[in-house]
Length: 319
Image (tube, rainbow, N blue to C red; front, top):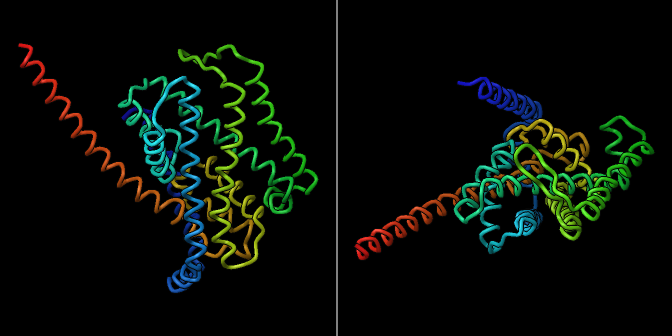
């Protein structure tokens, strides 16, 4: 095993141990009966509404890939893009190291549809930038609208939190400005990158922000089922939790997400609400994504076998 593999495996094991520790810290105070009762206390209407928000979020994530492919000057039907995006992200969100894990699945699909390795790398980078823009933009809004919860976690006064919120909102403005003024290519190693057109850059900011608002709405449905919680408190909780997940790279954000949300909104973040949210946004999409991956692999293999048989018949006839 190479040193690089040993380092990556060590980091993964450390992340898993950290996740187990956090989960134990959260669950040790509850009995199994309490956990089951807490989950059952979530009204079906709230859970179904949360599922709709989760569905809308994954459709929005498909638009990330659509914009990326358009920015490359390529064209693929949206159903294909949505399939590749959903499978890649539903699995990547749970595996951890989402950029790498989802990128591997993306390559498996897009390479079959004529895109090169460089194209797929640019799609992954584009989607990563869109995620960052959406998180920073919504985070900035949350810090301005609801500075109290973030200030308590970050140990800052509300005025300082609002200043950080305003600074965060300059990021999408600067990005859009660069896209408007800079049209030359940027080079990174042997690959060249070009900032997207201004219209696509603005769309990145908009769609990225909407996606995280939809995920926050999914979480809000679970939290509000057990108490009165303002929407932007859910937004603050999710933005801070997702930032912690991205920083730690814990697979699926296990423990990190739950611990952060519980700290930001302790009054309503019951164990049932957190489990229900994880089921709606992580586990159910994971089951669907895995099923679709297996089906797509079977279809691809059969299609390839049919194409090879057709080529063999064509060669035999020409001979």
